[in-house]
Image (cartoon, rainbow, N blue to C red):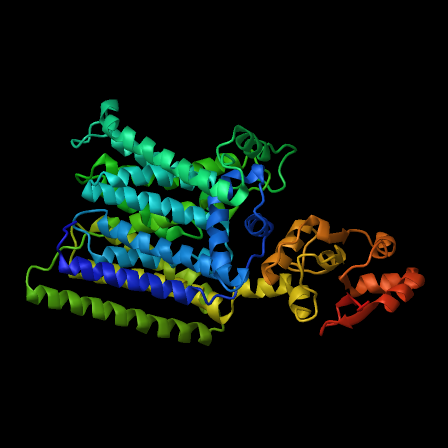
Length: 566
């Protein structure tokens, strides 16, 4: 990369401005933590907890903690943190695609970013700070630094690779497979494999790795009060023990190719495969080819992992490899620079016609499906895209070289496919926020009584699992896990309560005895719980009415009792 290239400097500035704009825009998502894992990591960060069996998650915990601490509320911090992860990953995807080959230009970067934003996981997890999304950002950072080193050969990048390798590992174990790119250092400039080739890099990689360990020692000492927590043998034992599942499957294993690669991300994955095969016929070095190994190794690992863990197919396990597919997919695009001004004008006209054709086909398709009383999305998935994909594959097989016609058709196909995917994400982040609705459902008891629930680090609360068990849907209200409930309270109200502050009753027949065991600052019951008490324990109800104030939510499905002033 040339140092004094004004066009490159402008591109860097524009990409950084785009990163900031995307970060700000995505921060206005309405999602929040809705799964137990996310709530656990929030609790670990807010209360500075040492949870050894999740010892390989602490870089995610610390990053998340920083955003929660800097924001006005932890929830605001989580939303900004999620937006940061997505925006930074997009920036890294752009430059990884842009710098991968010497002849690449901004079009490769833009196509890669568009593919990344076509993934439905972005709207499916909007505002949900899954550790797999942090792992995705970390693996993309590691691979970007590797690509940047191949272009610049600056030694400090090798140190940074070592550091990122350790930090990524302390985010999640699936990031380990991104380190396959380090085998690129075993190849010389001529592309020949030899162990001696890696020797000049070993010292820098090891020192960088040790630097990552040193950083963690400082973080563990400052936050947990235990400097060697991250690298303690006891921590590693607990981590391995955490995966010692026995007793068969809760969900049977399924093929990742059928369920995901050739389904949800069919076109990006086919483009990823095509690019790898096409570049294999060129004089591309093994150092670059090795990047294709990461997604394939990861899917092999998580496939075999289904034999060990009982949960079957879990989409988010593959998140770390999605940006890699996005920035490698456009590498098969060989854009010949127009020979003269006339050729440039011709290419511009072809591009304009292709884009207008996309809009025309969209209007035609929507009018057609309305006429036959069908769904436009189903028309795209079932008819339009399969036909277009077939034609694109045929064109790739038959065309010997790029012409204005092939360029125009491929642009037409790519934009036709990308537009609905990106608009899908926009719709379900901002217009009909999927995770926002799930968040409002799960947190409904807190949100319904937000102005009346006592807020204190010394609060004593009482609730039942009936609220969770009586609700329906993908994300039910509250939880039957006490640590989820604590995490929700702490996150919403920026408190630091622990297990001693919560009494959670699982069976209605136990409510009467435990609800009078001590005074509680507030009691949260379902209407079923309250009716059960009225029917089976009138004395308990009478005593509660003398000590607590009562109110119901607007939907009359919950009852809140708050302790009267003594």
